[in-house]
Image 1 (spheres, rainbow, N blue to C red):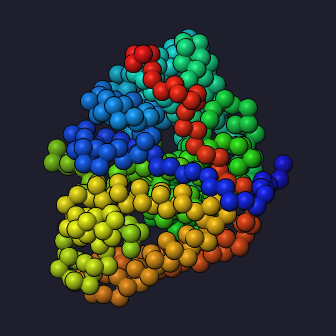
Image 2 (image 1 turned 60 degrees about the vertical axis):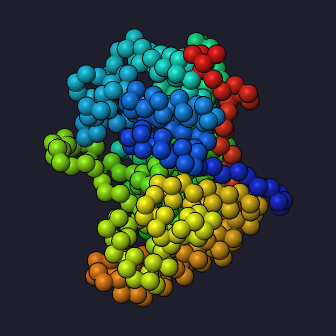
Image 3 (image 1 turned 45 degrees about the horizontal axis):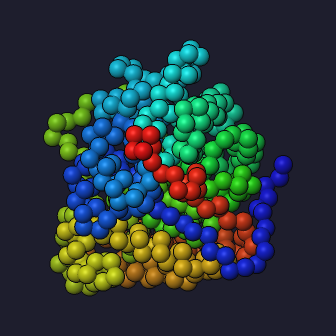
Length: 436
């Protein structure tokens, strides 16, 4: 079957796009403080099974505010020697030692695993479950792909059997982003998933994210458009920045899933390697502040450095519709800044009819980003490292604009859009068994 982008009639239809919030391993107290100030970062929220117990108060707050809970089973992580950790072993189905090896399980143990996931989702009030899946290291021509498809169908059956028919099941493809460029692999995806019972397709593309090259962004969008014959909602997982925004504007996806500031890129390079012991003094990555003009983030130290330059301070500061005090608000509350700027981003996309979104993105968002990046790169920040970073950002954004202009020419105005994210499996049914 040849790749065909389904055509649609010319109209002013507006397909909704949404933001999905990945809570991740952030401390629940920090997140509760964010919610207290600006409400839920997004209506749909992904909870890691391995973190759910320690985040139970946060999860209750999300429920109370009408948020929709999405369960990530973390099966991919606890099946990989380089990712499984003491904290990940908090997932109810994680082994006490070693990794989870679904492929070598007996039929009864595999049934027990799927049943445990289904029962957990219903008991704890999840509206959606991302079916357990694994990294497809060898592409689609692998027994792992067969296993993941079977697990998805078995989970749907298990949920229906225990009264959880209202709980939606989504499928997550975890693979290298370059695999999507191969037509044979795309055909394998379409044929392999055609009759699998799931609602939305999550694309977790390793090596792709907020720092993607212009060519990678162009290819990612085009290759996802070529998967639209699946007629499922498409979600870009662990993607942020202009890469995420352009994918939504061009209709490749109807949702992006990301953390508050991190989770802008996904990699599996270390998943096969036993991790080194982490230093007790290592408290994790530094606080990072999103800056639209460089399509990236700065550490607080970097941000403070450029704050002493009035011209740079003005250029990196967001508008009052996001942060009332501009620069100082961004520095003091980067998570609040991230939430507000993303809301504005989603609202702007949803205000534009489908057929005009690519041109709007290029003439408005992309043009503004390039202009800011070029101006920032011309100013001496006082740090050679930052100057190189700004110059690199300006070059990348300028090249990305040209790549996406070329893509707009390739994609006709009638290209098929990603189906809207399936927010509820059945209208009006949102609570799990324990909340009824």
